[in-house]
Length: 250
Ligand code: PGA
Image (cartoon, rainbow, N blue to C red; front, top):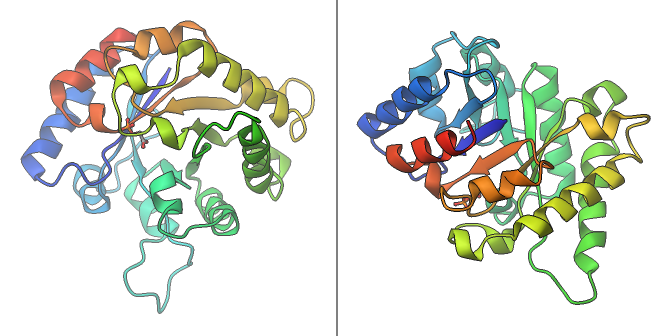
């Protein structure tokens, strides 16, 4: 089970960040649960300092990656810098970044930058709303095509996909997706992935769910056995709730 803590911009004090990292290290004692922390970029430098090791149970992710390869681009944080620090994952195409203007082509390009530096992209997809005609299924198909279409076969296998329906983000456990619906969606996504991954490839892609995962629903969401982990926002930035989340699936 892969637990990715997306701190967004919730954590703005170093003392709090340190407490969360310490608690993640205490919790990550079992091989079955791998924890990835995605703090604001400057904290990556403080916690990693070039020491990120792929075998550590607590890994670090950036919340984004520059679409540039360095040079005269003020304000950008490139994949090369992140990789040198020891960052092993990057959240790409989050709906909050898409809302700021990122489109599928830009996200596809960022995915290439991540792979070029050995960083595993955690790519977010998900519909804004569910329409009665189920157009959202077609929307997901086109989002997947934009991600997987341009990639080489070997990289397709290595993508971590995060299904994050926008309507379920930033709410509470009771307003999150129903466990049964989540299982159906993950099966549907794997069916679509079969177009890009021959044989049993689609079954092996890591698929996370994100959107109001809290201690009150994580176990039920995991119970269907379809998801490989969770991308967690607001419930990941307080030590007690984060501990409860990890313990619930350990
Ligand atoms: P949330 O955020 O857990 O606060 O809903 C999840 C996400 O946006 O990644």
